[in-house]
Length: 251
Image (cartoon, rainbow, N blue to C red; front, side):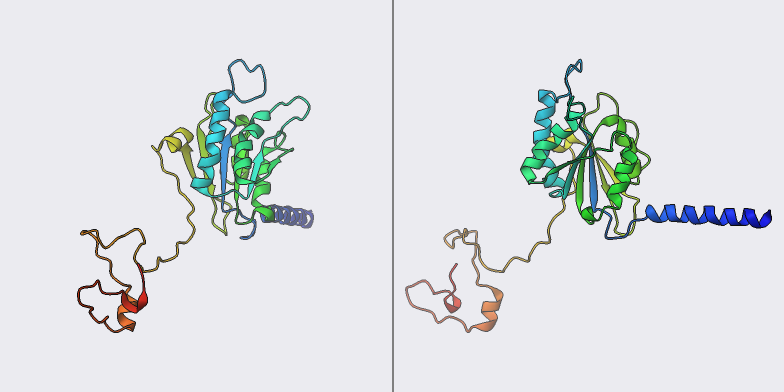
């Protein structure tokens, strides 16, 4: 009996280890960041499944805001949409302006209605989003499950009248535990909040005078580049004329 129990215990331990292995994606499979949003505002009464005019205007504004704040998305995903009844269409409708602005197709997560946790977990192990940026438009009652699948189980339930929250999850290459930051869409759009843009490395500017600057301006002195001073001898003075620039360089 003891030997049998020992064997069962080892099998259970092995199974648990396998489960943990499936939840620990490699560095190449983890996205750089995931942006979570509820779909846009809906009209009062719930007589249809479409965005309100206010919700559609916000979706258009997000099409500019999101790429400028967080970079062009690698993927855009939306909550389940019923193709026959149009139920849950608001998530897809909110994603459309961003897709048009960036040229990124929208992927509808067909399994999200039944298991949004799995939808999040799949993101962390999907090699097609390795190191990428994913924007996810979702139904608010399923957002906490999605966040838990993405490694953040602490997301509070979304209020029925809250269409303003924007959550960014950032991942280190070797971890599925994200750094979380929550924004207000309204405050980002009106400048009360600042986002964290992903800036491309800037090249060092060449040390040459700007074409817009003119030597006739008494407040500006245009000097030749330092390398010119090191490489070339001083220019000989020409009486009654403006000295030519060093080495034939022009401003």
